[in-house]
Image (cartoon, rainbow, N blue to C red; front, top):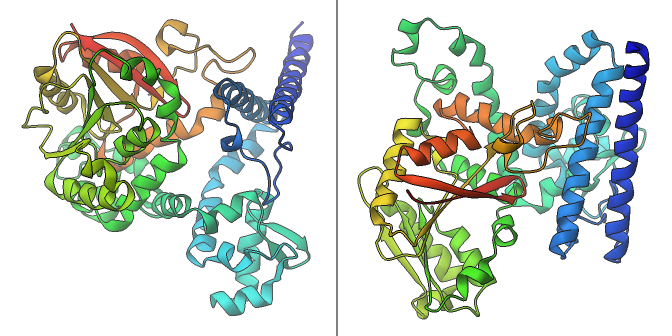
Length: 443
């Protein structure tokens, strides 16, 4: 019986992969696009305009990723799988080396490839060492070796040259995050007395200073890159904005902790024909950066007084009153629960019963069935209900917050509890691709 069950599990996983690939092929075909591949000119998920089609592709893609990982884990020798996982840091190290040396840029427009000797001469890196770095990356499908010792870009590596956001986030993760992670075990195994000393995080063990004192331009670019890579534009598709924006009176959306206001810029531009306004609130330095961004990217919004920039500190100040929607994105995961309650309580003070609060965060799902808590359909059996390895970025991001600032991403139950302790009642959760938008009203 156990033998037959194991065989059926493998068959089910293989079937999920096959059926999901069929869905992906059909959706791309319906859009008049060739199926995706590793080629540099491959169709991309972002090329699909239809929202329902995009959602079907996203679910099928998650199913393929989860099923492939579970199938490999099922059939591989466990000691081999564990060794592969322990060695995963070598891929990150090689990715940083190739990114820092601008190898992808050197290969742009050269599908025939470039000999390693030329890449060595252009980059200043020893040919033998560079060849070994690139070959490790090629077996992980970053770059391709078109003939012995001749390398070219593929869809993945080309992004290092054509997307500044991708390169920025790769640089941040493979340096500050990577280095901090090596101290996670030391941090976790510290005694209670040590954990209450001045050393508060793995980052501080690594760099000798708290992360919040370390902020620099490279880090800020990395944070912006993370938002770009994980789909900040999914906010546009996630909510029925037309419904909100066609109310009897023009509404105002307040972005709390907005940074430079790039999310509100995107929202206002996407619905420019609707009569609504936005308020951008953050610390003075970010407000100044915001004014620069909007003056360059969307000056007409400033000229038409459709955006206000109001400096404030969400720990000590109350957001501007009189707005209809309050929105906070990727702020709560930077702080422990008590600080989050302060932030949310201050927002509550500005709100009226008819207003709504939108909390935009990565929402972690359990690896065991808990449909009520997830807010989304679970993955098909025999996959882990949370889509397992397909959501790796979510859980790795959570550990990254632990490493950098001893903070966390949260489950829906945890976010609901934070809201409840801050004067809010949970209404619903909206799927925003890599992230989720949790909607609250005053309790």
